[in-house]
Image (cartoon, rainbow, N blue to C red):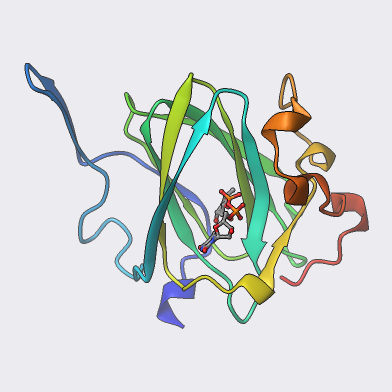
Length: 174
Ligand SMILES: Cc1cn([C@H]2C[C@H](O)[C@@H](COP(=O)(O)OP(=O)(O)O[C@H]3O[C@@H](C)C(=O)[C@@H](O)[C@H]3O)O2)c(=O)[nH]c1=O
């Protein structure tokens, strides 16, 4: 599938990021940003400070490249490389996405994704290049990757996210 061809993650700078007397205008994506990226679903989440969601992926043949943008507030966005053939298997990349920098993160096939809310509230917008496939959803315990999440409040994490396997015991489908 063409939309699975962009193999590496990319931090996408906004094409326009303007503040004026009315407020902000941010263009996060335009044709040419990721020419092969096809949008099949768009959704957003709304979370409070300290909430952690992740680390999630969809397994082949329903793997799901996506572009993540924090349109309100601030998050620490985190991905981990789960590609068995990758020299960087298990490597973690983390970026602050927030309403000021207008940045997005493109997440290719073979990575799990999660984030922690840094501001009082955040809204995170997803553009996905495949549709939701609940039977092919998977995850890694966010506490098992090589990343310091700071304070973790289990009441701000879903039951499902607390029950995923640890990376060390994980049989990657990628
Ligand atoms: C992801 C998703 C969930 N749902 C449903 C399932 C559930 O009842 C409810 C909330 O789902 P979750 O608890 O999985 O929501 P959440 O934990 O926010 O899931 C998201 O986490 C981040 C880290 C990602 O990377 C996303 O791709 C997605 O997996 O929405 C859909 O109907 N369609 C979807 O595409």
